[in-house]
Image: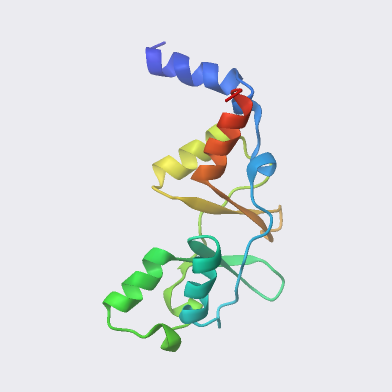
Length: 145
């Protein structure tokens, strides 16, 4: 086993490695529906997270709109008050469950170059969001720092 693999295995066996998404995720997440105006989504992002999960009438995750998506619309010359979430969302976004272990979450975020991902239950209903900073906070809290 190489040094990186040994370090990863040690991390997996540490207190941090035994955490799950459910123990570090944010449950107070601002979501919106497909008909939400992009201007409103931008204001949500100023108050909280850099992306807004998009849900249907049953709170099932159907997409996500990020700061990147809003900037792409502006770059195309679109006015945010004329654009809806449905126009710019990423459909079927990558998500995790509260039972996902943190090492898997690290892989999901790193391999997909993501900052945060929605957390869903077994019926794809939105129950939270988890970000890289939540992982780092979990690490610091379990490492005794």
